[in-house]
Length: 88
Image 1 (cartoon, rainbow, N blue to C red):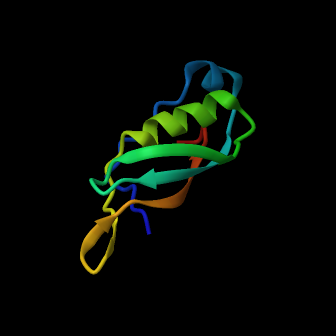
Image 2: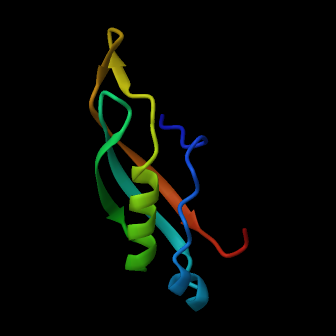
């Protein structure tokens, strides 16, 4: 399970915020053995490319605990959802 609690919140794109764009984006993240995001893909769009990209960039800066096998860090894919809401 990926814990994003220590990640900085992605910046809400100004144009998207001004337009009232909201939605949930589902990302596939490849977590490297060092805990950094090695690759990411949008699996399900929020409906707004700008929000999808901002989530991808923001969550791409996070550090995660990598998966392990017998205590050895392994590169692995995980999924995360990010909710863009103007009610925050």
